[in-house]
Image (cartoon, rainbow, N blue to C red; front, top):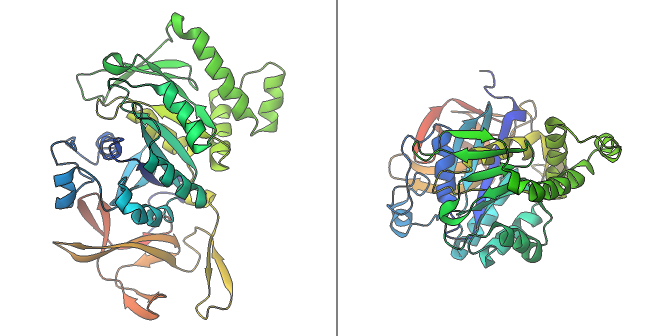
Length: 373
C-alpha cells in the first residue's frame, strides 16, 4: 500500500496553553473547518470533541492528550491536545517528545499566565518550533499588544507579529494580514466558514507600515539574497517572505504571532495556514537518537519509510469499546497490523493487534501506519 500523503506534507503539532486560554475550543474549530467535526462542540456545554473522557466533560478541562488527525490544504495535521492544568504537567512533557511543532494559545485578556511559562520552558527544552495564537480577542479587556509585550517579557521570546486586530472586544471583526497586506473579516452568520479579503483601512496604514517593516527586517535576516534585495530597496514577495519566516521559525529565531477568537470563529483558517506554512514536517526536524538492542551503540533514525522501524509509545489509556489503547508516534519504518515488535522497556516481543487512526473520539481501522504517523 503506497503512502497517501508525502512526508513533507505532515505536521505533527501540539496545542499548548494555560487552562481556559481556549485551547480545546481552538482545536474544535480546527476540526470543524478541516471537516472532521460536523457540529461545533462548546466546552461550556460539555460536548467538545477533544474532551471526551467523562471526567473532562464534567469539568470542562482537558486531562488526557487525545491525538487527532485532520487535513488542510493537502497537508495532514496530527494534533496532540495537551492539558493546560498544572496538575497534568507530566502529560504535557510526555506529549512534547512526540511533537515536531506547537501552537501556543494565549488569552488576550490575561496574557501570559504561569502555566504558559511552564509549558513554554518545556517546549524550549525539547527545541519545539512554535507559533502563537492570541485568542479571545472578542472578550472585554482583550489587549493584543499587551499580550505580545508579555510574550517578550515573561517568555524571553522574539515575537514576529504576522497580523494586527481589526477592532477588539465586542467590536472585534477580523485581522490585518501583514504578509498578504490585506484585511480579513469574517461573516458572522455562517459560523465563520466564510471570510472576505479587502483593502486595509486608510486610518491603520501608519501602524501597519511600522509592523510590516519590522516583520520584513526580521524575516529577511534568514536569507542573504532576500536581505540584499531588501537593502537595495526591493521588498520580498509573499512566497519569499513566507520562506524566510519558515526558516526562522524552524531555527527558533522568532515566534510568528497570529490572533483571533476561536469561540467567535474568527482567525482559525489563517492559523491553519500558518501551521502548514511555518511549522516543520517530520523530515525537517532532527533525526531521532536511540541505542541499539544490546545498549552498546548509539543509533539515529531519520524519518523515512525505508529505515528500520522505530516508534515511541507515548500514551496508554483504556477505552470502553476497544480495551487498552496505546498511542504511538512512528519515527521511521512501517508498522503493519498483525506484525511483531520489540518492546524495549519490557524487553519482549509483542504482537500488534488492531490499528486505529484516531479522530478525537471516533476511530478508523487501518492496516498499516508509516513514518510520521
